[in-house]
Image 1 (cartoon, rainbow, N blue to C red):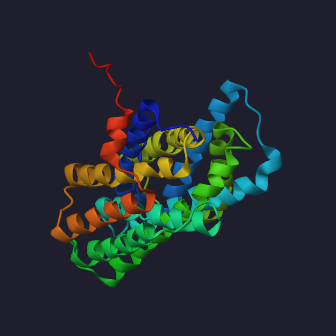
Image 2 (image 1 turned 180 degrees about the horizontal axis):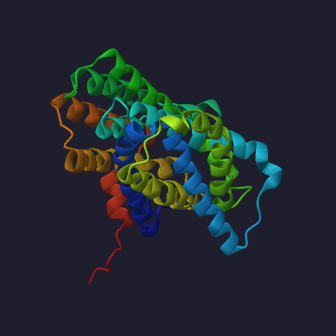
Image 3 (image 1 turned 90 degrees about the vertical axis):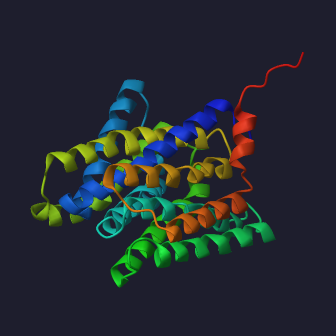
Length: 302
């Protein structure tokens, strides 16, 4: 597998900033539109964006892989988008972005299950640190750990598990289909899965300008274009390297939530977040400082 190059690293940073911001936009839009409507609108706009790009690129639809696209659409788009939208009714954006990092331990466990990777002592320690970090975030964060908060946190963990366990499957799919056709196909499939729930809840949604603007940004940027970019990177680097963006997503997510929504930063959230990031480093073996230094162009000596 090719080494992570400078352009790959820059693209992963950009993806992290976009996906970190998505938790801010979810927190803004979900309480107003409702989880079902917000998730469906986001996916619908993402699908329209990707379909338009496919038409311009004159790329064919991978119809013979429709079953695979439905499965991937459920795990990587429909389920996590809906779950995070539901969690945002009760959970701050910073919490959600930190809990999203649990995708990495789940991804490594899934890779080992499918014989794509092995579980070493370091990786087991990383998984333990990850779950301990989640417990710290929920128990010692700036918000009282009520049953509703615990349920929302568990929902985020399930959503991150969907991302993690589907990474190996998605990597295999890029060997059979182009990144653009996969991104478009999974969004169209996910939209079909969520449309009934959105239609059921449509009358309860309040279509305010702020909520619609948040959904528009998520649909076009953090869903449509970002998923295409992510699949392009995934097709060129290893799944573990692609998951390394999980290091930076919570940094952006917590920062955006604190800056724009005034979300509090408690010691439990900081220590728990540090444990989750440590878990990600342990299970992937990825050192962000080493990756940054290796990504920078080297000047010849003398």
